Structure formats: structure tokens, C-alpha cells
Image 1 (cartoon, helix red, strand yellow):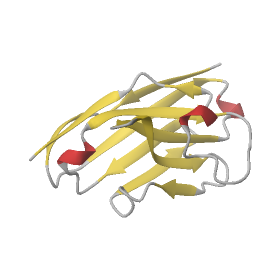
Image 2 (cartoon, rainbow, N blue to C red; image 1 turned 135 degrees about the horizontal axis):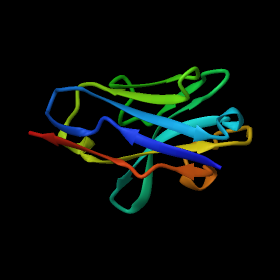
Image 3 (cartoon, rainbow, N blue to C red; image 1 turned 135 degrees about the vertical axis):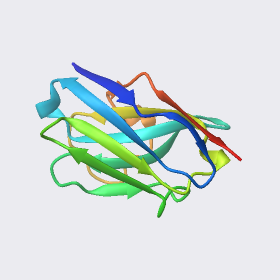
Length: 127
């Protein structure tokens, strides 16, 4: 079992920045990758970004590339998402997710490929 607890959401003006955190508890040594998702029209969850825990390979959705940076501190078992140049379209509840077993290919974009989810943290960007 892995428990995930997000924090860092809030209200920010367009152009501003926020840093989200996601602390992992439990079987953290088994984590292969962690990512961020948010709801989107017509989708249950939209992929935002993912990082593999050991090799720190990172991937981003086109909509956030160049503005968001994902990172992790494995000494603290914590995932981060630095969000810069925010715009109102980034307003959403952001969920962190963890996958335990390694997998190849472009697996990371589907929420069904993750094993555990946090409760979400609200990000609101005002215009």
C-alpha cells in the first residue's frame, strides 16, 4: 500500500506560480514512477507530467511543457510540480499518482496505468 498526500494548491493570478507537493507513505521503496493529473472536459483525468523515481526520466503534456517542472526528492519520498506562467485554463484539482511496477513504452498518459492516487489539491488561477 502507498498513501499519497498532496499540498500546495491555492489561488494565484494569471502569470503567477505555485509549487505542488505530494508526500508518499508506505511501500515507497516499490515506487517506479509518480505523476500529476487533472480533470479535463471529456476526460476523467488529463495527464500533466510524470517522473520515474530512479532514473528521473520526465515527460510532460504539451499544454504545460516549458511552464511546469516535475521533480522528486527520494530522501523525503516527495514529488513536486513547479508551475510557472499559470493561466486560467490551468485551474483544476491536481491529483498525484504512483505506479509500482516498471513498464516500457509510452504508458504514462493513462490514469488506468497508476496504482495509487492522492485526494487532490485545488489550483485556481484568476484572470
